[in-house]
Length: 225
Image 1 (cartoon, rainbow, N blue to C red):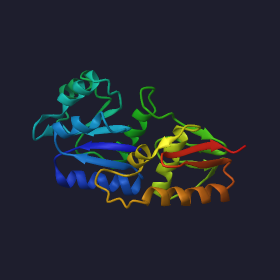
Image 2 (tube, helix red, strand yellow):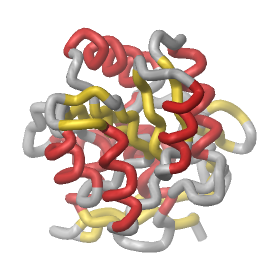
Image 3 (cartoon, helix red, strand yellow):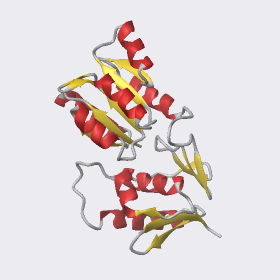
Image 4 (cartoon, rainbow, N blue to C red):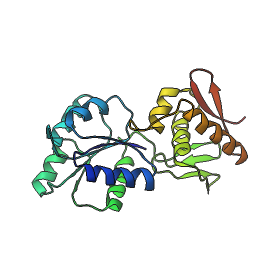
């Protein structure tokens, strides 16, 4: 799951990044202004946006109708200190999917992310199945034949990206976008190394799938014949 955090308070941003990327295995990009958020939100394949209201260049809520008018339908959760009933009503009427007042617990934020990702408008299906593999499509529950299949975070992200496009070639840039955040320092062979290890583990676990290399272009997941 790749999340865009729009938050200008450095300590809040650092805490959310640490919690969501380390504890919940998400890829998170962080921007601090409306202008930067609007620039990247429509171009990168995010699964959700966490949006503060009090930003240096305006009210974060102004971003919601602008994105909706551009056809950006991904879930948006407003996270803000402005938590009165009129504030919440305004946010929801402008097109936000949820509204969470600060301070909030991380568990509540995760629960709300789960909830918006289960809605029909979310980009990912609730569960993806290929061969003996299944994934919840958003929150890192990978299974083979119903049994948990433990993988490092980046290998999970690679696998879920391939599973969403089973039978189709996934270009390298799409995989890179799914696995690495904008701030990651990436070595040239990093993606290939993750996929090589993943292929060995899938074969050893008899997952009923193979990852084919489309030389020079990308990778494709298919069910084993």
